[in-house]
Image (tube, rainbow, N blue to C red; front, side, top):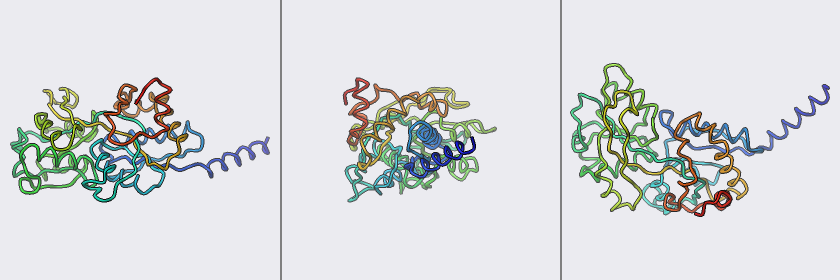
Amino acid sequence: MQLIIRALALIAFAAAAHAQNISIATGGTGGVYYPLGGGMAAVLSKYVPGIQATAEVTGGSVANLQLIGTGKPYLGMTMADATLDAYKGEDKFKGKPVPVRTLLIMYPNRMHVVTIEGTGINSMKDLKGKRVSTGSPGSATEVMAFRLIEASGLDKDRDTKRERLGAAESVNAIKDRKIDAFFWVGGLPTSAVTDLAATPGVKLKLIDHADAVAKMNAKYGNLYAPSVIRAGIYPGQDKDNQNSVVWNILVTGDKMSDEMAYTIVKTIFEKQAALIAVHREAESFSLKAQLKSNSTAPWHPGALKYFAERGVTI
């Protein structure tokens, strides 16, 4: 019996030694990407032979796409607008296009323009002269925040006193009255925003901005859509917030094999319940969302194979 146990242990050790390590580039700890990426890492490590996946804290979409560009084995969570810039080699990727490939459309990311009672901010125009965080460096929050500020008739540099903080850091700063408002693009609910809304003595305010979507799309393409964060999503949120959304995409590079891409996508959909248990935004992973129009990069052939088997033509 001891010989059998020893032999099994050696086999397990050998398998682990030859496992492919894959990092899932996520975002800051206060958002949705990080816990959801951790759930994906656990599912892939458990159910896909030969894969050992880990979730990595990053600055967000831009940083994730830059990691994809290194050619190392990465999956990345990113927003459609940043993905398009990376694929075309524009904006923050100027002259450095990334061979990014779409694995699956995840869920719509909601732009939150967050403030609290007492700041005097009731509209986008009221951000003028205020201390505002536009997201951490390397995040798609920053990309979209700049475009929204521009579409609202403000200049991000001249009209605001700008900080570059992630969601959790922004919440701490607004609690300490070091900033007056912050931008955050994330799923619902975002834990950091929930934390702020549940703070005693604080009244959360989400600023409407859906009217700026048309101007954003006129300049940057049809990447954005008007949407609503329903009242009650966050503690004390007593009215709907008219906001904007952009799709989140799970991507990789062009070096991943078709077989590996197929297996990853198949496993994520087959084990979706385990991901929903981690964060309810995983409920949005659906076959009907896998549309050519929702992706701003070419689809990976392995992903296309899986969706074709499920009757989805992309």
